[in-house]
Length: 234
Image (cartoon, rainbow, N blue to C red):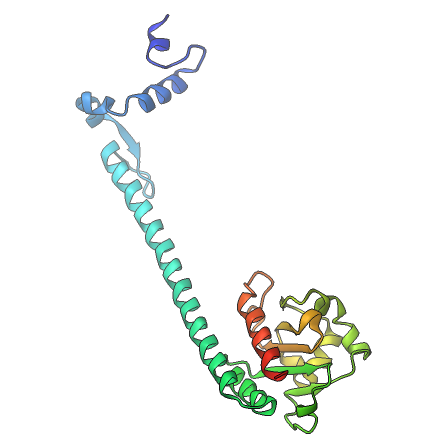
């Protein structure tokens, strides 16, 4: 058995591979050979000038710390955003719970979307008859359309899933939902109401193209849709 094999370094490798493996198996090598460590020089990560191995290690650790700080700041920002969103959902829920009738819930819904979520372009599109809302006059926020309306059928695939969707919509769909304001809508969030969208659809529009995008989480939107449906059908 060779000395290399005895130390865990297999034969048949290049010198660099054997050195890398040996150092990996003997992390205290430079501790035992400190004069060699002091003579080793490496290029600086940013300036290109040569530095000692210790200085290079310090630089690597500094870079790692900077990256860790950046990721921590991102996590904190996401946590704060989620906390703010949870607080808005809480206020939204309380508004709906305090509304004694479907008409009051409708008013609370419109006000909350506008005041708590800055959703100034929102449309509640109902396809199921709700007797208590027959005489409610909340246009252009409240829209009523028959389930067999061709404009409604263009959302059939979305409604059948019962899941919210964010991003872009067809021009005809945007025009139908937002009317004269459609030209200023850059992105849209669509929230089916009821099982399979049986009650209708909540549409939220934004002038910002990235405000609602396909990669964003829709869990809060789904919960909002369930709360809205329960409040309107009480």
